[in-house]
Length: 197
Image (cartoon, rainbow, N blue to C red):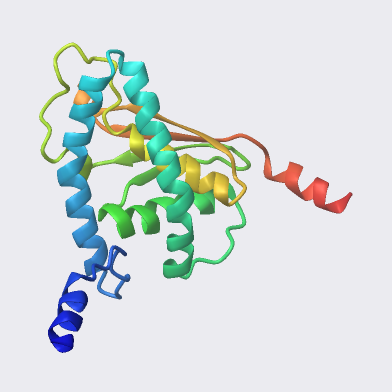
């Protein structure tokens, strides 16, 4: 009798942790598909809960920010990335490594002139809108994928690079491309001079 009760206890154990990242990134692929499938339902529910698009956009940004501050630790632990020396290098890693790792896409980076703090990521494909043809009626100012802005902002803040992250263009709003703008809020020279004092 004690053996059967032990088996029942073992069967009831549930491991709620996400699967570890494998070299084939299959764990990220599973998480990405689940996230994409449930994201539309999340936005639909928020549209029911909040009358104003601004409130929905703010909620998605805050949710993304909270994900970003936790996700950066996973990213640094599993990507093998060392410290970046410039903003352009940081944004390049976001585009080529982070987006690829978590969403399976590689945006094109534009901007970043010598010493510049403003960049854009152009998404040719956006998995979050795979099952969306258009914005809900009467929701023209909804930023459907605003969670991505929050994720980037939260992750950058955790590595002490505060930035303003916004959607500049959105295919769901009729634009030719989806573009996320990243503007770093302080110059790198400011950090160096503070360390020297």
